[in-house]
Length: 165
Image (cartoon, rainbow, N blue to C red; front, side, top):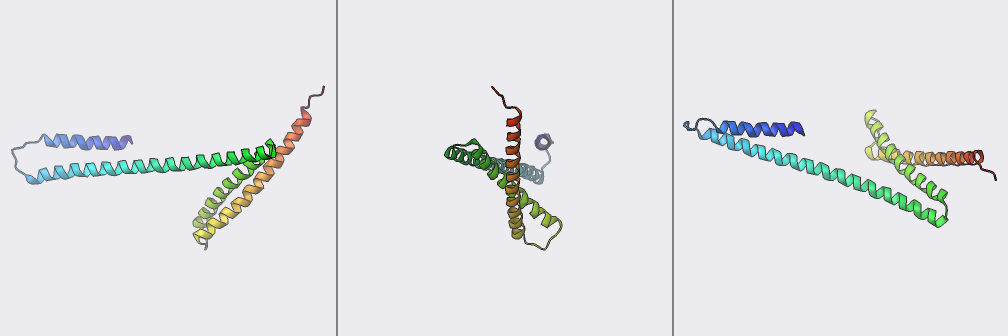
């Protein structure tokens, strides 16, 4: 961004310096070139501003979508926990939903990139569907494994640090 501001300052100051030249020479072409230079500078500034605003808007949209998805996962997990009156059920629901979504994203993107990288004879839609499906299966498997490991660790630490009266 500093380079762009430096370049714009250079262009503006060069216009000011060239405007200080000898005015006794009659040359309509010189005046027209300065006008076109200023006009081009304004157009380029507008284009850069629009690109920056568009990038900011797209970033904000993606962050807002991620926030809404996260809040949805948390609220569903909370509702399941309240319905079943169990913190374990709420945590398992959160774990299964989050691992499934992350697995689908990583699997879809990963298989799509592998198909492109190795030039597999598979269409883009097929590679995305295969990646999402395998990512979903991997995410569910990962959630089940993590829930079993946490259950075993909780049982171990409960037995290990049990306080007897």
